[in-house]
Length: 286
Image 1 (tube, helix red, strand yellow):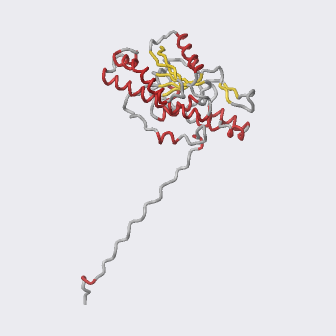
Image 2 (image 1 turned 60 degrees about the vertical axis):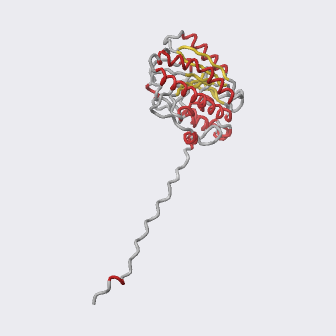
Image 3 (image 1 turned 90 degrees about the horizontal axis):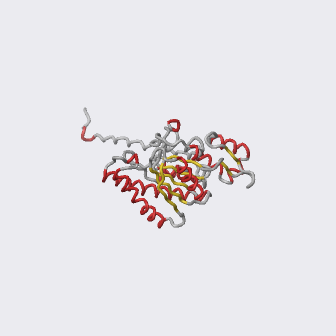
């Protein structure tokens, strides 16, 4: 006798297995910021510019290409701006065991990684406590070595710097905007541009944002520089869209003239928001 199929009990389907837990990623200890925070947070909090949109090319400058210019370099490159950075000093100087015993290195020859390893081997406790190892460790994730402004061959292709952050767009060896972080660096840059004699006949806006050379204020200054760069880029893009791009790269055309005329007003509005970071500006020529 066969069983009545209506009396058969339905077998419940097995519930789907739970999804696997998310993989926890460990922070990269080589990317610690000047104040001990992880610099990867910068990438998470800043909205990158559209890769297909127009972007001005920037250059940041301080004395040794270690602290203020490198914080700004990281901020700008994390926001997808083509970026270079330099120092204007005769040598790279970092704090040592005493104020009369700095650690001194040559520009353009010694890598950040070499500096990091050497300081770590000398006195890791001292250089971690004063933030130098964190700073240099961060720098080696941004570019290969500290570079000197006065030795920069403007207009010569920088094809060997492809691994540097922000290098995309700077391969031609020129920038649209230079931002220094101390008035004496601004003086050195402007004087050097005058001495070069403008061989390219190409305009460049040179700003100074006066930032004290310490860990905390370098971070504040980097944020302010990014805001200024964003406003400048927005104005340049608007002028190019309105007037076209004819003559832009040679410093001519209606779009370039319109942008140049707007720069003082952009700086004045920015200065109102950042009154504790005194600024200077001039239009110079490569």
